[in-house]
Amino acid sequence: MYNLHRYFLVISIVIAFGLVFSAGCSSGGGKKKATNGTGSGTGTGTGTGTSTGTGTGTGTTDPSGGSGGPAGKSTQNLGGRDCIVYVPSSYEESSCVPLLITWHGAGGAPSNMMPTWEPVSDSHGFIVVAPPHNGSGTDSAHAPGVRTEVAALYNIDLNACYVNGFSAGGQTAFHAGIGQNGWAGIMAFSAGPRHTPPMPNASGLLPIYWVFGDADSTFGGIAKIRQQVQQVKDEGHNVNFKEIPGGGHDLNISDANDAWTWTTNPANRP
Image 1 (cartoon, rainbow, N blue to C red):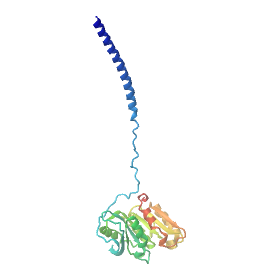
Image 2 (tube, helix red, strand yellow; image 1 turned 135 degrees about the vertical axis):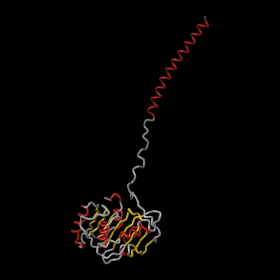
Image 3 (cartoon, rainbow, N blue to C red; image 1 turned 60 degrees about the vertical axis):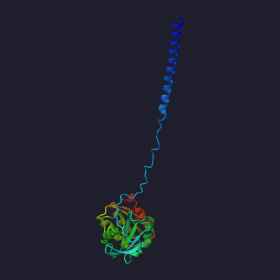
Image 4 (cartoon, rainbow, N blue to C red; image 1 turned 120 degrees about the vertical axis):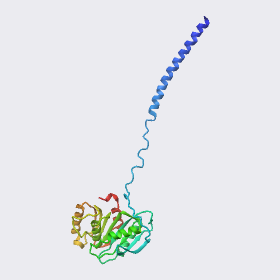
């Protein structure tokens, strides 16, 4: 009888201890689960990343793949005319580069434009071609041939071919850029278009960097140029017109580096 009593006493103690232990684990486990549930809930990471970009790219390139042209400055027959060509030292055939065709003023020569553009070419890495012309302001029929032949010699970005000129050369740049296809922008120094809107806009709407001095009486003077600027804007082109106070008919009133930087900026293309 004594042994039986002791047996029931042991069983009772074991059951009581089990209930206490079970209650304690249940309570403690619940608290730990709740704590763990909130512990990693702030996982926001660093989601701002580098996906914002800078937006300074030049868009899709279209390399011509040309190779074999001479480096530095040379005179080459392009488009049926003897042109001065300047290739910056940074040029490599493996990378396509922009092209600028620049025309001198009436009575001038291709060499007149090179001191203006050579340092800019060195800084920005594009090829410059200066053809001769007859000074009429409409002598631009050779321009596509020049572009084609340069692209066969050098690796040119065919989506980044620009035209520029001073005085009658600026008129020629307008005549080529608006009347022909394949041009990405116009830079006109002390000049205006020979034709009035509606214009053919063969290259589509373009960024146009335009400089004229308010003391320049050429081409009808500043009043006429202001009228032309508004006409070209009305056509839908993005015109950055720089009216130079006291400026006369002089190539030196133009900032070629500013012209290149603004005109080639993709944000300024209409």
